[in-house]
Image 1: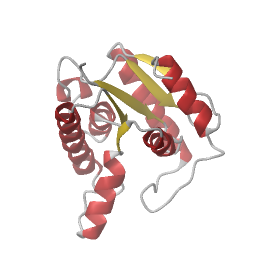
Image 2: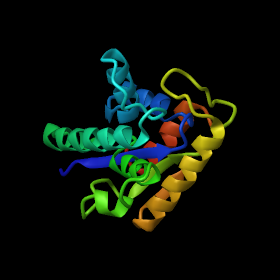
Image 3: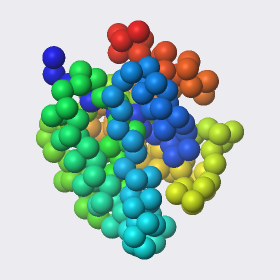
Image 4: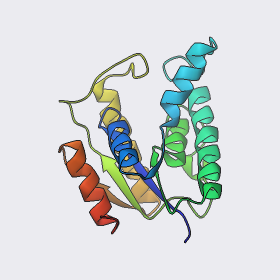
Length: 179
């Protein structure tokens, strides 16, 4: 069976990482968010490709990491792989930071399953931390940019409800016929 690369995108602080963790606990292959890994690497090495210091350098690094993640997932042989963000998120961030249009940064055909799951803005769970220094207003604007880009590429987006994580997992698995 050809691997299915399922993208979970959406609002920063909307519960994506928690959702991926719950999918992993159910035995599914998952790929963590490039952005958080980059922030950890840059801080450990005194780098400055951080989203609040050099947003374009950060976004380009995220795009490279997401492409590498995708290549690794493709060769791993898992039937279904869930991605916490991915190339589309990074390309949209590049364009927003002053780089080229996201359309010029992505391969054709696009590498993810046609159905993308979005976590909407959810103020009640949004938390700023060392890796997420922006506020909810910035996260909501990012969500709108991502929604527009996914629509622009013809993806079918499924906005997840603001519900407990296990309910969200059940919705995703049912939607994909994996429950």
